[in-house]
Length: 227
Length: 403
Image (tube, rainbow over all chains, first blue to last red; front, side, top):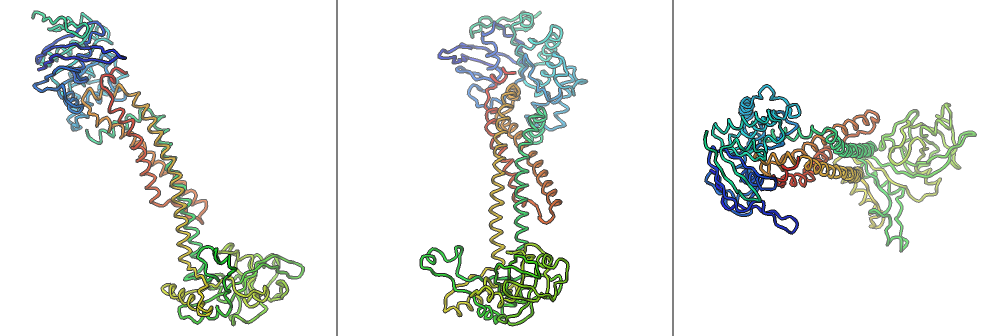
């Protein structure tokens, strides 16, 4: 479903060029569960941003669901993000003035969905992450784990094929982090491809496929034997 | 994205910073209210002045000696010592023969003193005929006005302005008394109703005498001006032509008379007040531009404060156009709300002013209110474009890194 070939991402820092990604090749099949690990500055977040179409590669080709997306303009990338990709961030990125339901509805609002339909869908999403009773609470009235569950609802409400999580448990304690991981792993079992970027080996180990990165390169791509 | 949703999101964003939003609303509403109030004053003044001129008389024309466009004899006239030929009583009498003219009242004006027994008072001496009463719509408090006689007949009678009568006679009956005006004596026939300023002079401060007496008193060769009442509204133009033709014929073909119609005076005042109103509106409008700059400033702050939110919106599929729309809608909502508040405040202030000074009809013209609202919204949008574009062009990765 995703095929990256010879992906480079260079940044100009002063008069030096930093190669955040250096000729990365990567294929991700539908429904896979993979983790990307590595020290900070290894390029794992940059790789996730490129997979998620937030960033464009400097060089290389990217085929998503059969379409070459490396050279698309901002609008086209936005459409792909809207329909194919869900994001979860370390700091949740909920809109503080909107309640849980409105936050989950936001992608549907941007897509111009009908009010009734988006209410129903957002409520179903919140129900599936166990937050229906708290759907009228604003983010500052929710715990960290609850906030991340709202963010999961928002990421999933457009029924994407990929869920990209950047340090999803980074701001959470072990128990609510575990709860968040259980939810996204359940989503993966239901068919979504899940990519988790983390520096926490405990979290990374849970994936079926482990990528390890250093200096903008993937140096290890191992599959865990199915138990 | 639906317009309702865009508007709802924009309003929610504005509510998040109530103090900042209300300060902006205040700035815009002050601008709009200023336009509404200032134009209401100017428009009230215009209506008042034209109303006063309309009350001077109906179908009125005024003839002045001399062919003056705007500057009297003009440069050429001054250099060769040419002055206008006077309008004589004979000229006035000649005008009465026109079928297009209903009444003619000459006017001679001078300063003087009036005395009765030991009391003396400065007055304005008016020389005219019986027709002036109707031509100027004056009314008498008591007695009667000048008798209907030929204009060139001297007659020792006078009519007093209200204040003159009060101050000379101090409550005694003035009718039938003889007073002294300069070197001549005359009998009081009537007293004018007090009305304050009407047109060019204060009728309370005058003593009215037959025109022939005043011409003799001041040894004046001609009259100051001639009030002419046309036979009907449709015949004002004909009457005007008759005056010019008559005077021209009597002055050896020289067209040395200026005829002002009341319509022309009112039109002139309308023009002047129109310009004043527009100028005031423009000055007040500047405050709207200032408010626009304020909007831009605050929106720029908002964009940098909400960078994380903008990054998130992009991550979940917002197109650049939608982000632009969201921020522009915020600016538009602010300026629209501010405009409406300002309009209401200004209209209410005009209402209060009307209640306090009922003589003047303070009311902002519709075009000024509409223009103020329009300029407010336009300046919100124009000055909102820069911050909104900045938001729309943010790089999603960098934006998401900011929290």
